[in-house]
Image 1 (cartoon, rainbow, N blue to C red):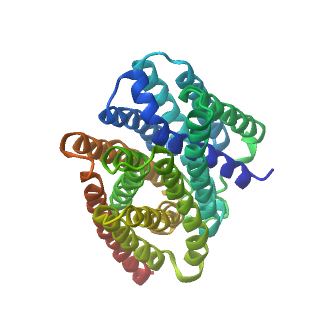
Image 2 (spheres, one colour):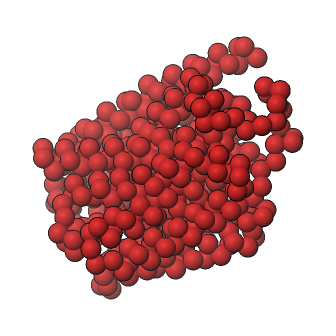
Length: 390
């Protein structure tokens, strides 16, 4: 099996875990006696783990190599998922979720770093399309096991752990094949060494990249995790139908990455992302407007389609923006920024939804979508200056 295929399977697993939580939460909050605000605590726990795994990934990978880093991440994810399915307490759930976050952050950053150096933008988008496949399958898994059969939500997490066991075994078998090769790359600054995190953070472009990833993932997770509460508890939509449309949201992310990934290689990343970021604004406005449920479904689907290429194409763009030597650090920083966005933006939106009303959720998403447009345009202008200088 190719390394790209193993990376795709690992992203399916990550997507299933995130997608499952958005649907399973309604049952989980009853088990632990929690409200929507507490979902933010779980997202924060995932984020804290992912932040540390991503932020220091450049230095850790320089010592361990990508293969060992991904294997350690897979093991942590497996341990965390098993613990989630068994824990009887809220504190245990939070700690277990933190462990899963550490594992997911390591896998995500390690695989992204390897693919960014060795594959095209199309391949990077296809890799992240498999995340969308997992995110589509995750809600369907919960619907089948918890609503259709019906079994407990813990059974769905046991099923996720079983799949993660397979991923762990694959990383274990191939761990020596993931080494990065800098020998074929231009030296850029004239020295073959890995810059420190401090040196990479001095690049102005890095902070714009971190901001884009924070806003983008905060918006994506808000749509995937909070829309179910909006649909069921505010708009009276059947839980099964709502869960199905959450699944379609992730499904359209998959479709968008397949479609826009190929276009990015043909006409350029910047034009594609400009169209997509503006399209996301339209989708959030439709979800907020909501003259009929059908319009909300259309807005959610459009959001999925246009959010799709932003993360993978931006990762693939990183070596061009900051240079190959800074890329492992910066891709880690992007993952850390994404983790911060997941921790802060959906949590804040969930708190506002509990205290003001769930209809504030699409308004918050619209503001995030507008911010995403502004930051992407700032990155594009800087990229144009780089092109003129070279």
